[in-house]
Amino acid sequence: MPDQEAPSAVPGNGISLYFRRGSRPSTEAISALMEATANADIMARITHRPPPQEGWLELLASGLTFDLTGLAPAESAISGDILQYHGFDETPRCEELEAVELSPGGHIAGGSGLLPVNRTMVGLATSLSLKLPVAAIGWRSAQTLMEPRYFAQIIVNWLAGGAFPALGLTALLRSEDGSISTKGLSRFVGREMQLEGAVEETPSDTLKLAIRMVDYLVRQGVFAESRVIDSPRGKLLLEPSQGGKQVWVWRQP
Image 1: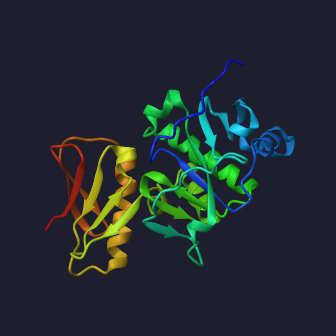
Image 2 (image 1 turned 60 degrees about the horizontal axis):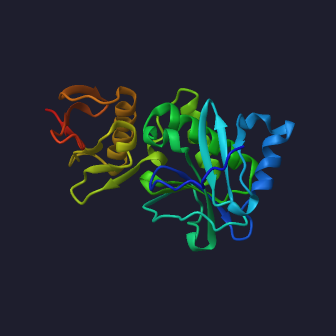
Image 3 (image 1 turned 180 degrees about the vertical axis):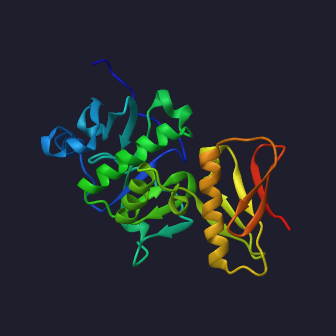
């Protein structure tokens, strides 16, 4: 096999698998996991295996390649700041964890916002997290951190046709005026969303509506013209910004 350079991480494109210090898997451990017939449900295979000290592997899943970096004995992957935590009984101390990064391979890195790429990547991350002693899972583009069982549950539900996992693959941020904005939605639809608050609405109901709207936008994909839709909280006006970076969601009388 010809030489291949170690991958350069593209900020925000990957999934961080966090391990307790000293428990990051090695390239040999991942290789053994992939080759074990009992773990064929991972549905991936190694397509490039550099010297173990380089600490990375190229994996092929559903015809797409992904880089798994930060494996022992190399340096752990760089972890980012966290905005929101999901599924934990107790918030983990990230400084006590070490990261392994799963990210789109070089030739598909430019398509990291495509649903088939992301669905395959989160499915692969779920399979790995169920076979390895993963302590937490970070979705880099939204700066969220999830408990592994929580992550597996929302991803399996989504891949089976359920709602998009807004509480995990996006961050939903509440402003003082009651509105909710997203971080990370632009990865899937090219825009972030801001949902107008309502005085008569509880914070819980506004959050539920924001989750529903994120799912709607991911299912609909990119659109350029304003539209009015029905929701459990009444009619809503969806107004894409002219600059193409935002979707405003307004309440309609």
